[in-house]
Length: 497
Image 1 (tube, rainbow, N blue to C red):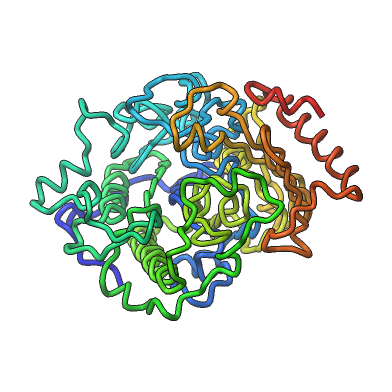
Image 2: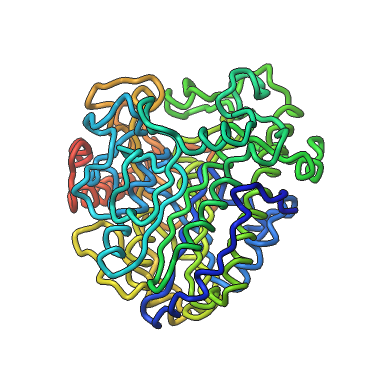
């Protein structure tokens, strides 16, 4: 169900009827990026419990990347990679941005890097951004998105947060900022039922997306729609929660993983689920997570309906994906920051009836590949000095792209969660996935090697086995070549193979 329309949603989008139909090589683009959504948290991904009818229909008619991976399993570095086509060692956003950190080294996206917004703005697109930017100077329109800028969060105390201002104007409580408003079991994901549909941030984000579309008049448009959900705190409509009885939710097979033969940092992460948390409590926060994904699905339905009403769906590339994943109890953790599949793998689909035939793509899509792919599909020139590679030609032809290794990088949890500013902590872990083999090189801990074909749950670390020595050496060499291509920056330690 779609929640009742709020006052900010009462506008129409009739103005875009007057916008010219995009020429064949310059489609409209709406890029929806969720925050912390699991790769398998959708019906089109094979989940038989969760209800995502809008996304399932888009997937049936579009391109589904069954093996999409972020370039870093934490928000700001991942987002910077998706938007620039560069790995973190090249774009240098190595940990999450916050106003207190400002332009400190490793804590923001340097302004000289080119994002897809910069490219499309130069090509004549009207560009708008709604939701968390999370890459630095979030109060200020940037990187081509100066036609419409409605960023909330990470703005600093001296700037007005438009979402908080909206709550005040509507006279509703800002539950996201209220201490003690959410239930948590130990330090797991916080959740609650909302009191009023106007209190939900995804609803507000979609309202402003429609406002941006309403202002489009004569130019092709690019909307970057940054949806903070299902990242906690999770605020869920009651009617959707009722679809997911807690005792019917799945219990992760690796919930009680003892982490034997794993690196020490796996045992000391911030969001390790306390032993006192019961299986039913894990099922409870899973129910809220699933209900929130269903809410996202219904809100995306509003965007799809608007495009259908105005006859623009055929000529609009609608992208849906997540910046990174969510462990949701896997290996005894919630949140992200590990290189396990549910943390680093993401849902990703493209829907463009006028330009792409439906297909399921099995070849891995790296967290640097979507930017050049969308750039090429828009008819624009793809930057040559990036890490990512476009698969646009394969998608247009309905062909499987060539399978290539994908990589991910991340700082230590000392830097991400505990505020360390030691340079060596900013570049601590590198993952390489090649076929079914996943190798994680850890700067100050045991390395990891998993065979996803025989061990999909990543329980058996094979890195220390003598029979895997050659494989480890070869994958280390591949990582060295990757970081050396556009860096290596702070990952120079990877050059020592």
